[in-house]
Length: 420
Picture 1: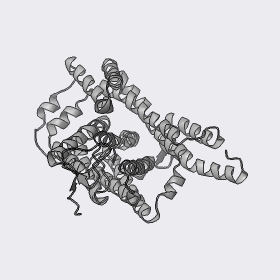
Picture 2: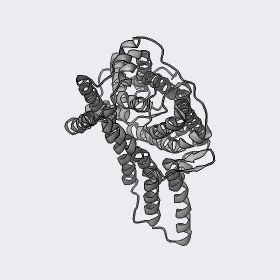
Picture 3: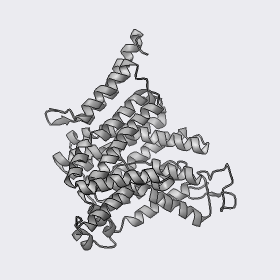
Picture 4: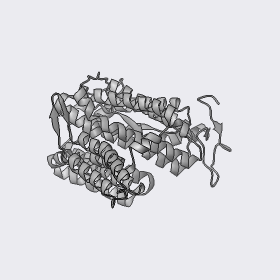
């Protein structure tokens, strides 16, 4: 089968009970395009939240998101259906880098993250993923993810208190959409709440529309050249660990749902996301990752065809050439960002707890308990220290405690026979 050819599933019109449209199949093109548009809608909210929060150009991020998705499909030989959208793991290090050295330096950190992830993908292709499971057990990955989310609590507070009324409206809307909605709408509750908060702010006269009026309808996205600063790059190292966990988890989930053995694509997936992230950072977009939202679309439609993701990737590129659209997003009021931040950053933190639960982490084991507890306090309180030109912030220090500390203590406990 050539890269861009798929077998027609049945008649191309229906899916029989108990069947799925596999990765190398497709429905009729009108139906495939329809599913592809669903994937664009599913990724839309989360992909745009990162540039809205960090100040990156939304259309540039969308452009590289589409390019990255197509690159991912090519490198994984059209065997792993995935949309590469903005990763929330980049929020904290980008914010820290921008505050100290500016956006160009933050983009350098994104590029470095991508390069490291691509190299790890090459290593996995030759040696497998066993060492990843050894280095990043659930107690470690769950702790890192939780720290990355909750370390941003201060940023959420600052934005929220800058526009408390809009913040309350946004947060309440997210909660109500989540409570009342099932399926697709429930999965985009954060973006739905942001839209409601935005509209409320407009009605109250709190949205500056000058940039919207001045923006063109059609033009290429704006591109920014990164600069490289080793002290800033260090801030992004924990993100690499999160992206590894997300990509490996995505490939395993797709394999389970389709019944296909995709172990041979683990390295390709990591390398593809690494290259996509490198390209995004090199041009002024946010780093990418595989999207759980799109797994939800596949599970709901039972369509795992990579053809639908080619449609989604191409559609994202088309949308990215509308600066007017990006200007609307860039004008999002601070209070709405605060409401989103309270919900979103907390959710990222809770996802860390979910990793603990699903990994059945035993917290009666003193090693697990002290590592998680210490890393959380270090990361959430942002305990930092500076050595020369290098500043190690709370996330970096928490990651070191989680990764290195766990291996040291667990090795000692095992040798002493005190592990539980």
